Image (cartoon, rainbow, N blue to C red):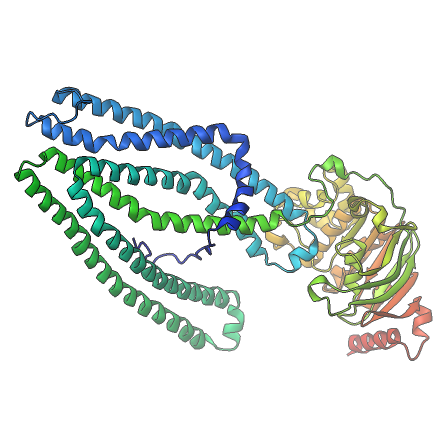
Length: 610
């Protein structure tokens, strides 16, 4: 039956894609069904109770017919008592038994579904957070979030409702057809000759209406996108006086929604008329023919009532299968998408914190040896070309160069977010592969240009550098990072909520919290990725003072656009198009009149003067 709404006021939701159900897709789904194994006892019991409940439900039309016949002193069924009262009591007992069984069936199915889904959600999330950076570079966060929310919700609905409903409707349909034949083979043949054709037509026509409904939802989603974009960029809309353009754009989409909705309403009206005339006409015809049989004493009136109810059961069961099958297709598609994540190869990172403690200490010596690297998603573009340099423990090494020269890529390689196609990276003279991945990341810290804070408190964000740190340790780190003063100026002190991505704090405040977090971590190697490039002069001064404290006594890799911040570096590496073209300290590089460093330095000086 068509259930797609074409009312343009309904909420537009993206419909999950369906997958073909075949042996290959079912094999994939079977992998997810292994999550039911720990709870298979309740699942089997639930299926058994479902089967019994469905069979008991089939007895009620027979009891109703028997009551009607008993009222006329006619008793057809020998297995039922020959008394109106006893037949009624039998029906009530069966009804109570079915309610009792249904309670446990529903509870057990929900318990199995919720527990197994929780296991799938846990494993999917655990897998996601241990996947390499390249996986996230090729996928949107919204898409991944959909895997855990929409896809797993679809699987949940299938486990709790769809499977149970398919079994129930199948039992009811088969049982009803058998009982129809027992009650009256003539009427059964008449119904079965017509009903399948009506339902097939309803399914095909219903699918067409659902397609129209989907078109209306897509258009409505487009209109919502226009609203979102306009409100997010309202300053640009007003600055360019484009209110009329946006209004016309939105109005055009709304007119399209109305046109599709009205067109769909016309087809839905035709469909509803067809259902009323043909489907109900069929039942009127059956009742008419049955009444003739009753009149000719070929069947009892109670039998006719029983037959009508079983016919309704068959029609309802047949009508429910298209939707149930569509839900099953969505669940198969959702299962395949979830399994794509579960089958991905993750990094060697344990979910148990105790497994990730440092086993091999790093003192801070770092070396790149003939490193060649291209991002896996853009393998045709080599970002780093035969890079070699050394940084001794405690040294400050600056990496400078134009945008796109590969500076931040080197930081990603140090953190082992990616691995070079050729060449090696050494820590204390040992190849990075000889260390546990967690050993390297536990002893390397980064202060990025765009600091991302989690939506909790300032205390929680600083403590992220060392989980389990005491309040005293956190405050001490904040003081060294020049952050304590502004933190204590807030009414909630260290319990101040920073908001999503730290939106309630200024850029300089976020930077200092990131520095405090890095100080708390106490790394052997520190990466400063343009940590002051987007700050005003006063914020830059405070952050620079905090960075001086942070860099003291540890190897520091400083990626910078502002060359004034790296004059005191022990070594400066100049990158251009993935190649190291100059190396030396500030004095050596500034003395090279033809060098890129001197050119960039003069360019920045002239810009600052102007």
